[in-house]
Length: 349
Image 1 (tube, helix red, strand yellow):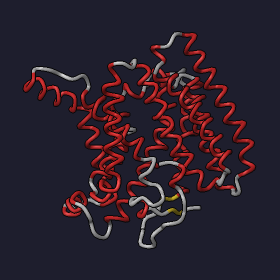
Image 2: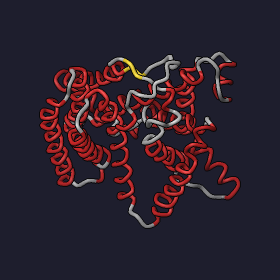
Image 3: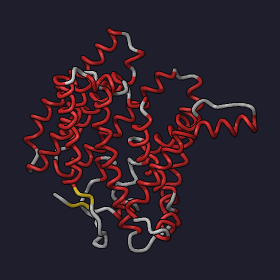
């Protein structure tokens, strides 16, 4: 989801469920909770929690099952389970698939792994923060220059925080210190920018959203600087993922609540599974199965049939492809005029 998608026209009166801006704002409560946890651990428990947590969320299977991958799978399932959406975006989906195959597949033979990793990291951070700033734009009503100033300072700081966390084991001490310094300067710039831009926000509620996004990045920087890497990723990940699910669930309830319109939701109705639970439940189950068993199953088949194996064919290859497609499609599937957008309305402003 991006800035352009949040506008108030085109809302159907028949849409019973609404995406609540107040609910979305409440998700940022994870920020003070994580800060409180950090301070309690630092001053009361001699950093015991920091030592117990994995140094990177990617080292923790439960984190991967709960955050990141499920909403990526959910967005892809939402698209492919509706013939109307596949037909509407067919050319874009094919073009992006070919690009991923060429750039990340064939290109990996020539482009260094770290370069590909940094490109993907930048796209990930951009996707996460563009969604949050895009949603906030509807209530902050910032002029374009102020919106993009806030966005790019957030994204730039976020990229260095992300690299400082996920590349820390491959960075020299001087390089790690430089990454932290750059992140610190960009975060300070974001805070100063917010002080300037807040004068342009016409409502108190918009002001809350403006500062929520700024403090999300600033708190991630602070937690990262204190080496609580897990918490630094948890905060934006939780806010981003639950925000995304609020759109997916709202779409499904408004489209399929009264009369299921595809086989997935007809099957769910037949077993009396609530419409709002279908996509979240399916995406979490698929995430667990793919993360826990996907690579082993694929390699078992390849070893049996072709006497060969592929390194992380599912957890890196297939899920990586779904993630890149998710980053790409979310930039337009919820835009005004999109067939998905017809089933979304907003409340709580």
